Length: 469
Ligand code: ADP
Ligand code: ASP
Ligand code: MG
Image (cartoon, rainbow, N blue to C red; front, side, top):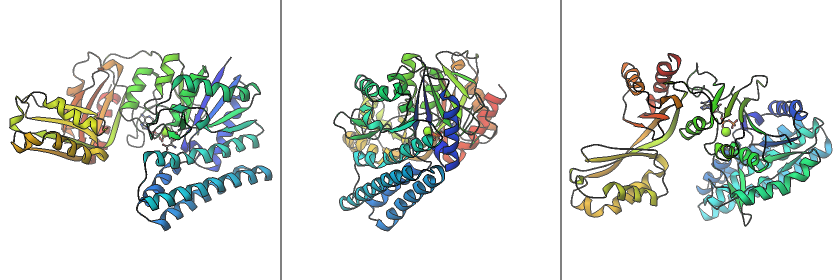
């Protein structure tokens, strides 16, 4: 049985024309596969707007969040009027939109009353973008003569309760996906599934993390033993760097699962970092394609692809980070100081992206997301209260606005000299390197630079190790 999962990202469903384009892509591949499943994200910008609504509600800015909700409402209706011509379909959709919008207003009001929003509340709110969009896309496909039906992934994907970055529970998900989707597929109905959204065993809404629709597609691919998964986006495939920053970035025709995992982990937004997990196990090929250039092949991602010795595949960045330093001359010789530091960080649930310790043992530096800095510093200060009072540790401080720039490539293994070339290129351009680390997988080299130098650092490294080979 040949089964294809196609996921369309926010930009692919960001306007009425884009949704029509999605329709023609589905139309043109429908005949080639026995079973076809579509996954859709929220319309472009809607998830961000939903998050903003919740934040404004916390601040008590009722007029402002109401006007954003109205903007979402208008966007839904405008798209619907352009893409759907059938009166009955319009009426039904309109009623559905009204329901979601009323629900959203009610949630925001209760957040306003409480003065806070929990991660669980945030998931209920952010899931609305996808839940409003899947019925619209399904109706658009029906308008083009396809048989399609919207499906809420809360009915399919079962996760734990790690709200905002929930983890799927494989067996239960597989069972539900099959139970819910097989009856549609066997009648040749295309399910149009909400990306990003899932639910716990008790049916409480969760989400898979920002950009999580890619992960949804992979989870469905795994559960349905799909032949292939295709993610449709707004660029020609996985590229040697983010084309918004590096204008001469090139498309990479073929990549291995492990290279893409590394790339996504180090910030290439084109795929959610967890996307590869379900796909690797079943060895399902993944393609990244451009909705607006559908005849172009895109990037094919498979188990192994030939890596070229010494060759860097791509340059990525992770932003909104801070470098935390724990320093003091008395640290030398206190046993277990690093272990205690990182235990204190872990208690805050903060993820450490990079670590370096000076060989003098007079400082420990590590990089964490800026939004976790306050809690982390407090946690370390309370762990090290005694050492701080004795001045064994002088201070725990953070440098904000830093970026990790990473060169990724399977061919980097055992290739001396790449780090040197990166350093010289940055040195020649007058860019200061704050810290450096080689990934333990030997697939990557990461450097830390200041935010304002990050784009130029990317361009310099790209020129030196990718364009010049
Ligand atoms: P979608 O809504 O389709 O999921 P995203 O915005 O999440 O789209 O991801 C696509 C974007 O990822 C591109 O527009 C591009 O700017 C960015 N991007 C970052 N790094 C890369 C890369 N290495 N290759 C391709 N795109 C990248
Ligand atoms: N709409 C969600 C987000 O913006 C999920 C996705 O786009 O994949 O994060
Ligand atoms: Mg995305």
